[in-house]
Amino acid sequence: MKTVLIDRNVYGPGRHRFHAGFREFAKHHGFRPRMCAPYRAQTKGKVERFNRYLKESFVCPLESRLKGRGGILDADTANAHVGQWLRDVANPRLHAETKERPVDRFVREAGCLLPRGPAWTGIAPSIPADLRDIAVPQHDLSVYDAIGRLA
View 1 (cartoon, rainbow, N blue to C red):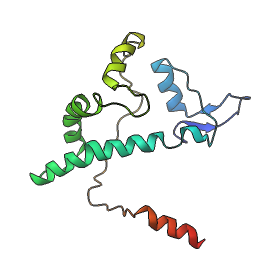
View 2 (cartoon, rainbow, N blue to C red):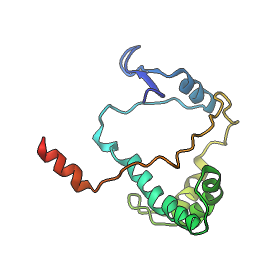
View 3 (cartoon, rainbow, N blue to C red):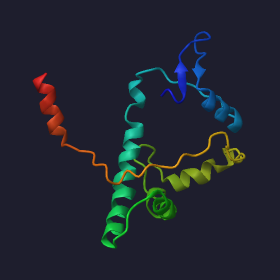
C-alpha cells in the first residue's frame, strides 16, 4: 500500500522508505513497522476472511434488522451496535485457527499489552462519502471461473 510503503530496500536491504504520515503514526505509538516479503502466500486471504466474517456476521444482519424498521446502516449506527456484537457474537465464539475463544485469549494476554497512548491527531479525519446509492455487482464465483476458461 502506498499509504504505508513508498519503496522497498531504498536505504539498504530491509531498510524501506515509509510514507511520512505512517512513519509519524508509528513513532507516535511507539512501534517500528516491519514488512513481510512481497507476494507472501502465507498471509494471503487473512484480511479478506475477516472482512467476510464481519460482513456476514455483523453488517448484513444489522442492515436487515434496520431495513425492517425503515432505518439505514451508517457509521454512527454501526458504531453504536458493534460493542454488543463483539461481546455476544465475535469474542465468545471458538476461533477456527487458534481453537480458542478471543475473549479468553485476551484475558490471558492482557498483562502483556502496553497502556494505550495518547490519541493520534496527526491527520484530520475526512468526512465519509455517502455510498448508499452506489451498487457494486457481485457475481457467483462460477462466472469468474468461466471467464478464466475463455482466456
